Image (cartoon, rainbow over all chains, first blue to last red; front, side, top):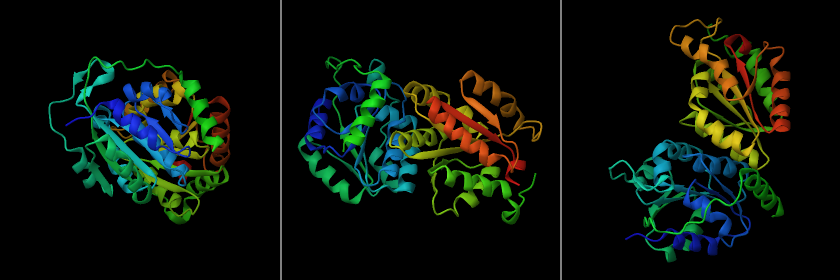
Length: 189
Length: 172
């Protein structure tokens, strides 16, 4: 059973404190980000596939007192699967990875991912990530995030519906704005 | 060139001292032989945290994440790894104008004429030019600390990447 992406994002927005730092992978997550009712500092990637998790890892190591959340897609993660081993080695307790699994390259037109059933939760577990689980309902996300705050790093797979007719907002911030807004929110807290 | 050994790696110790003096906290890295020698000294520092990564692009992203949070990081990779980094340099470092300092082992130039390194050596400076990455070649153990300090200043003032290329002699 998969959940609409917006339902996951709404559940996340409802749970996020102003002290959190959020990195969104390119595509739908990044495009929704400025439209979510959140006060957390957020950094949206326009293009860099596979960079969300290591970018968030750098933030987590630099700001160990603040929760850092990476929103990644399954296509992006496949491009940089070794990054889970990097996280498992570094083990920052304040890093949570949310993997939106929809088995499509949504940002480039909805092409299929390579047709193989990758068990990302098992890969995360095998990579020494202490919490690696699937979350099946948006209503369960808050509890999962709460647990991650005390025992991370955490990896949660979010089964996400692919809907080609979904009205995803366009990119509405340019890179300089994204960087400056991130800095402003980071220091406001 | 063989490892000069921990007792005589004056250049390596100068690099560690320069990182510490610059306020570097994180050193994301992929090793090669020379970087392995250097990292023995980096790992002895109580001020520097080495972040072992599986691909060089991760090292760049980690350094950018740290920079966005006001923390200095040094990406330490081989020039083979630099050649992996075109997309991340273009789509993260350059696109968002994030300071990023690279320390790169320069394999395959005239000081290191190993046949399997030579193609990388021939492509390194041309690639840095093509990607609009400012760079310098290390000038030996006596100069490298000052070059690191200058590199960090430049990357932050310019909001653009800077690479310092080093050879085995620079660690001795």
